Length: 409
Image (tube, rainbow, N blue to C red; front, side, top):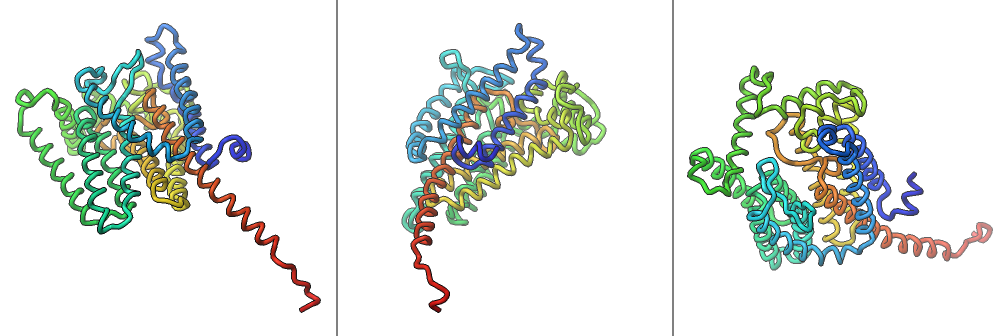
């Protein structure tokens, strides 16, 4: 298997195996989790075929992107950033609403989520800015300021409809700056400013009635309500056993995980898929555990951890800063989003709208995640191409060493 991947797929063979394994898990679990969609559709196989179609297209995109030199990815990110800003502004006025949030645009009949392109563009542009810091005294403040402007432009546009996505993006870029050795003092002030802003925002929403706030802040009251409900449930154990309209997803997610046991009920035998409104999206990890058990749930976690571990190894082998920071940033975005989705399904944190990367239903999310993988594969491909000629030169030098006869000593 590994030799086959090395022959036809360039880059890190282990990461290709992780990518293919996640796609297989995605196809199997979506077949089960999309039962409610299949029931409503005229063609019962349509939701499954749609998902497999996106996975196939995503795989082709990942293959194509991994052949593109990362210097072109670097330039293309700025165009993607410009396009993202336009679409994020547009979605505020012409966005398609789903689950009480206007996060989608319909372009030529295709529903698209601008925040996904924005995340990708911001990570690559931030990595480019970090890589330009050659002299901490002369360059650091200039590029640190540019990164703050970048975050200050994109994050508020995403924040209006999707707090968790904006927060994850901020955290990922913050970690990238830490790895890029931007001074602790600047990062400390930035972290303090973020905490202060969150406290002021939370306090304002609690103090000001919804009717007195602009309509753009309506989603903020949803976030606060979810946090209050989560805290109340932790304090009052009796409420965790009641199923209401407000906690229906959380409760059925718990039931699904409890039913899974060690080995699960096997794919296709889930019961909770028919009760979880977002079984194929936000709560698909609960269905994975129900059908594949604790062992299956841990296996999926390990696949994402392998991605993060390999990304760290790849970053250490990069000959320049930019590709190293990009690999770290993209892998962190995938893994942090993964564990937030899993934490929601396990009732460890309040409900958010984060899909499980590459597994949850969603065309934009799948395709952009495949681009993440494609860029990482492409960077590993270039690293290998840089290392192999050096190894060949070393072999030639060894072969050209004079042979010393033992008898002559």
